[in-house]
Length: 153
Image (cartoon, rainbow, N blue to C red; front, top):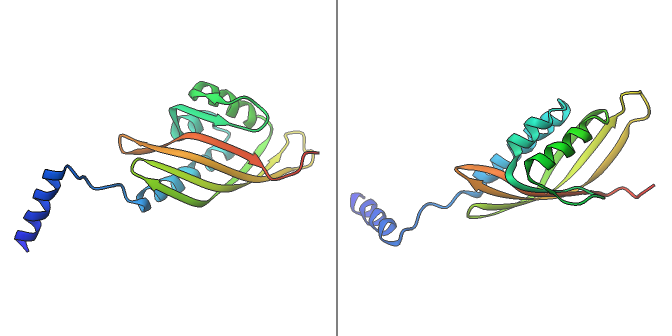
């Protein structure tokens, strides 16, 4: 047994092979990030959304607007969006594909917004695609695109 461990250790050193990130580790981190993201949306905390979810060089692609480049643009978007009312957001990962330090998540969302003036609750559902990258042991959203399944009114 000791000989087997020694042979494996030498093979790793010689080939430079390092353990690859486990897909389940990435999936768990991404699902946790999504849960925290939704909690921060409910709390209307744009700062926490951006600082804890997006990579510094992230790109957000929201519907009906140009791409948002970097945390400051993303912070402005989320700050404005979160002033529309009390928001409930559920993110559901449908598939996460991991390759080395990159992961692609495909999922769907359910959204409801209760306006501050008590008007009718607005509901939306749609899909999203997020490219994640692992930097210094942490998974960050690098590219985030989402759009509605609902018809335009």
